[in-house]
Image (cartoon, rainbow, N blue to C red):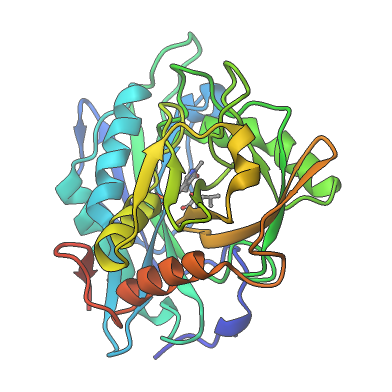
Length: 340
Ligand code: PLP
Ligand code: COI
């Protein structure tokens, strides 16, 4: 039976569920892994994650579909991205097959926490890995833990799909040749001061520009950008220091193959932004959150789509993507993994 949760009023927060998955890496190998009811982690005071932030994570969602199944969306791509993150952070790889199997186990075990179809909520799944053994010299840990928990969530931004106001950040998120392209916890630690400051100043998020020249659009703290030109071309920034968003890659496919739109993945100059018709933030948590206004040091760019609702192309992308995720629209082969 579903848990007694006010599904329609959930925010993006943590609710402890019944089961999580744990596997430990020791003496050069991962153990067989298991589900546990213990939500606490006990590690050395000198653990690699605590001293030198040796940790990476993933984020994906499970959905209840209109015909009552529980599915998750493209976990294979999260598994692959976690391999890249682990390799870049000198952590052991947790195999793609085991990652997908562990996601299935956690979601199936917590099926009562998967928000019912139509409530607008979803089950957010958080796989993560960290150095658990002691390191005091700057070097990788020898032991690691891989875990997955899940939590029912509502919209990432308060107000759901109301257009956001964002600002151009004076702080950088990721350096060229740094770690911006992987999902390292350290990238998010870097962004905390910037987001707290943005909120204090009344903005919903930060637009980060490329740190090298500060002329090109990169991404926000937790989502990639999608722009729409006045002649309905979808434009999305290409950069070696942004996270390769699975939502963005899926939206590009949806735009081209479902909606027949032209898509350009290329460098986007900040000076072009004033000419776009629509702007949205895309990610697992953000889904597609429309942006109505972008403020650059007092200079306001008001997108023609406005502050009341998302623009027409953004809306079509949103409806098609969420339709695929919730079983209303046929998915491309392999996108939907049926769990139950
Ligand atoms: N960019 C950043 C910095 C993120 O944290 C995320 C969230 O995972 C994304 C983009 C969107 O990626 P995805 O669509 O794979 O969730
Ligand atoms: C996600 O969308 O999964 C993320 O990890 C982004 C984070 C801001 C919650």
